[in-house]
Image (cartoon, rainbow, N blue to C red; front, side, top):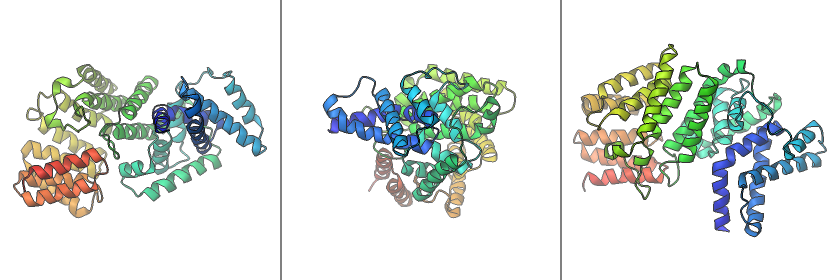
Length: 410
């Protein structure tokens, strides 16, 4: 049974977003689509131990979920036009109907970023439905309580249903209006793939690759939007380091210790080309373009010591003006410490500490611990690193922080 459960979880991890996206398109209700998809998973756990895992498990789950939807409507005596549409879907009659966005998952992202929802509602809903992230993971990413995330998701589903929002492809003239939300969601899905907030895996390549795929599709649809190319550039450049970011046993390998010959240099070239396309539009770099430029500095440097840290500091200063956040300030502090030393970086970190920024996050004490160690304040550094280890919800990251504290000596 454990093997079947593992197979179901693997199929859902890979196919879940597409299954929900397809169901949302044909049922017109995100919450309802997610419900019947979950019922299909329960069916799989019950039936696959006897019948075996189907060759096309994703299609099996989708078909079962569609039939579950029909059964529900039948019980509710709601056999109306939706019944006929769904029935025709089961016969594959409309599977090749033309859509301006020929990608179910990206269509769902655009639909969930409808203007009837606030940005605060759009992002957690899409991360839950499209990214398949748990409410705990989303809460960690957004730095808000779990209960807040749960309320926002429930309210967002109710709002979409009450407003009768069609979960279909918006007209092209609507794309730009929703672009900021769409890019934000794709970026956060990628971020969770690049550095998982929870569990025993340091990287979740399935999420990162799906976000990059969505970004590439989006760049083809909206070639004159610089921030689309900027986000693709950022994801390409960051993904180029995946092979070197963890050891064979999954242990994280930090930037200073990575074997740069293992970086994917073809992907670095793709990322730099995407950044040039963003610049060629001629509207200046936005927040994703600036982050991609920072990633480019790392990608072309032969080593940590030979990295152009002065340029990275300037880029973070620009990013802080354009998209201010405590995380950007913390990253700027790291860059300043590499450029001119930890004594110059410490006041930035102390301001964040006194402001209560990033309270409950491991990020601030981990950086503070590193800087204190460089300044020779070993006992304070060890305490901060152990505090960070206790706050980190990713097991691998917690281990790295505890090791750093231990390396400071008894």
